[in-house]
Image (tube, one colour):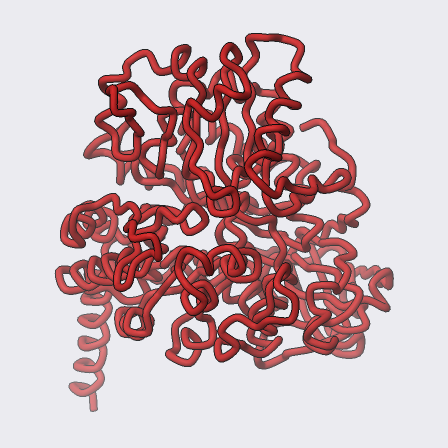
Length: 602
C-alpha cells in the first residue's frame, strides 16, 4: 500500500511537470485567479424579480449578497441568512421588479480606436448611434457621401485644419476612394476618409503632400496604392498600410481633448448596452506608452464604468522591442488591477470582411478578386506566432475569409505539432466565412470562436452582390460551432458595429437581419435564447480568460450585473433586442443608463 501510494504521488508529480512544460510559462492558475475577499464588514443584498446567474448548479435566484464589490452569496433572502444574520446588512429593493444578469462582456472591442472613429465626422451607410443624442442617419450613395464631406469641410473655419471622416462603406458605395475623388471635396484642406472596417484610409492630394514626405519608402508597404505614373493614389488598404497614416498624421488628427472624448463615448455607449467588461484588441497600435497611461487613467476613474482586458497587438511591440517583445508584454501584467487586465497577444492574418479585402478563395469573390493575406504561407505565420505560443500566451487571430481561416487553422496545427498545449484558448477573431471543415478542425485543435453577428444582421443584404447569398448568410456559424463543441462568443468589434449584446443575441436566435425584413439568413445556424445569452456573459468571459472573475453571478466574483426590464430568455424571441437596459452594477456600484446620457469631462 505504501509503495502504491508513493508511486501514485510520483505519477501525479510527473504529470504535473509534463503539463507545465506543455503549457509553456503559463500555468493553469493564469486563468483561474479569482478576486480576493476579506471578512465582510457591510453587506448589501440586492433583491430582484429574477436573478439569472449562468451558474448551472444555481441557475436562478431572487437575491444577491454583495460586500466590498464582490459577491458573497446568491439565492433567496432566506438562503442568505447565514451571512445577513452575522454581519451588518442593507436590503436594497430598487431592482425588485427587474431582472439581473451577469454584466455583459464584449470580448472584442476597440475603445480607443472605436471612440476616435465614431466621434469623427460620420460617413456611415447604416445609422450610427450616439450615447449622447440623435443617431447619424447614414449616407446612401456615393454622391451623398461626397456632398456630406463638402458640407463638413465648409463648416471648418480654419482652412488648414484636416478633415477626418469615418465610416465610408466600400461595398455600399461601390467605389474605393482615391485622391482624385477626394480632391472633389478640397484641393487645399487635407482630407482623410476612414472606411467602416477601420482597415482602410483614403487621402486627397493635399493630405498626401503634407504628411507623406517619403513616398518611395511608403510604396514598399503592402496595400499602399500607386497610380500608373508612379505617384501615390491616396489609397492605404489593409492593416499594414493604414497604420502608416496614424504614424504620420496622428498628432494632427487626434488631440488630447479628442482622445478623452473618444474614451468617454466608448464607455457610455457600452454601458447603455449593459456591458461591464470589455476589451481592447489592438493595444499599442497608436503609442504603447501613451496607451498604457490612458488605460490606467480610464480604469481608475469613477466617471467610467467598465473593466477592460487589454490585448497587445504584436506588430508594434515587435517593431519597438525586437527580440524582447515577449518579455515586454509579460511585464505589462504587473500593471493589472481589478479593472484592467493585460492578457494574451493579437495577430492579423487576412484583411477585412466589410471592405471585401479578406482573403477569399474557392470560389472567390463574384468579381474575381481575391483579397489580402499578410503572410505568404501558414508556415510563415506559425513561425511569427511561435515565440508567443512557446511563452504560454493566449493568441487571438483576426481571421475572416475562407482562405484566411484555412491558413490560420493550419498554422495552429503547426504550433500544436511542435509544442502541444492544453487550454491554450487560441481564438479565431471574427471567423468571417468559415468552411465546415475548418470548424471541425477548430474543435480538434482546441480553438475558440469569437464571432461578429453583424456580418449577417447588418451586412448580408449588401454582401450578397459580392460573395453570393449562401456565404453572405452563414457568417457567424454559431449553430454548427456549438454542435461541434467549439466554445463560441459574440462581439461587436466596435467601431465595426456599435456594442449591442441583446441585438447580437436576437440575431443568432432569429437569424434575421436588421434591414432585410423577415428574411432569415442560414436559419439552420439558429441557437436557443439560453445559448445566446451565455455567449454574451460566461462564454465571453471564458474567451478572455476571465471566467473566474466575471461572466456569472457566483460567490467570489466581482459584483457586476446588467439590470434589465425583462428576461431575454422568456420574452418572444423577436423581442430580445428590444428588452430595455435599465443600468449596470460594477463592483456593487449602480450606474443607471440615465447617468451616461450626457458627455462628461474625463
